[in-house]
Length: 591
Image (cartoon, rainbow, N blue to C red; front, side, top):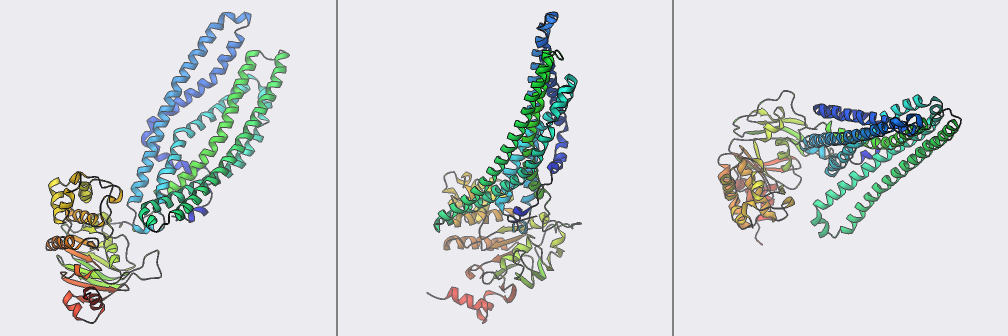
């Protein structure tokens, strides 16, 4: 899987062959596909019959055929009616099929990327994924619901029209075919250029989407640092790159279209010239000439349309490749081949046995270096130390967002790497330093990890997290919509909702990563009391910089530079002359 920068150097799409990978997605809807194909064939046949009817109408004005004129006119009208109905049916079936397949593609891609471990997103920006999920699938929709159908119809018209042209006048058809090599050459030449420029255009769109996503999600930080102008400049530059790639692609397609149209219709004019001479010499009738010219127009229009559609198919091939990369992406943290069942019910014993780990993005630095410790069921253990000491990394490995390079992590004696990620993570409730609050109601956010929870259970969790009082002060209470990323809430309110969410999940192990860092003193006291009550019946791991939050822990592990440098209770560690004692003196020293 290439990252956002590497995508600029991807090899060109070899052909539209990558679109064949979509065939399995069409299989469940084969009846709709066959129906669309039947209507496509029907409209093609009717289009090819119309010129014959037109020729008969023209020849029907001759005296010896005047009695058949009404019949020819009625036949032409009937063919036109059937053509209208079959065209409408084809449009409905093809468009419905396209919408259905693209909806499936979006779902498959989302299902794939939502379960990817953090290591995956170290190599690919979220904005890039969103661009593929939206822009690339939109392009794919236009191709499946329109371009493929039009390409098939025009291909059939081209073949059928050429055959009927030959049947009408072999001589004129031979002259018309002399121009074919002159049409094919620009299609092949400019088609490759359009394909390359289309991929550049799509990548530039992805880059601009990634940049916009990153800055808009951090809009307050951008504004606080008065970086709006710089953000506008960077985003504007990416948009201009996208525009320039699109301009070049459009120009190449315009040249291609102009060349094909001029060459094709030059051939039509030349053939008409020769046909007019044959009509004058009595070698063909006026109806036959009209019939031939209509077929020639159909063939010319089909050829010109195919030249345009070829460019669309090339763009779709590039978009499909990008989507297939996500659909085929392998999670850096694989599921075990033969998973073992998770402990049920889990007692909550945690063992780190000689664990070492480096983040993939920072391979030169060890995040954990031969760390070993055991947390007994029901025990509360705090992890303290300076920033970058490895505290949060312990949680990342426990949740199997990453796998250790060496050593083993066990839950109730079972190796974490041998369980499925889902079974393992059900053992934990997590409150992070920067909690994720979704664009939903207060109740919806609390019940995020327990979607079937009753209103009474949700309220009980909120009370335990000291959140009930501020929730009832909101305009609609528990049904208040909190906005994107909880924009309507303060930092402390967000964390109390996250704590309530963890309490409601009622997992055997509670992970608190700086869970009270944004709380005021009173709220922190209330939450600590709630956590203390919860900790009596479950294993709790607490990461904190503020040592006041870990005084009640049964044990404290002091980490520094990825290793455990001390272990004990608050009183024991504060009395020693180590890192914890120095941190305690700094935090508890009188002003």
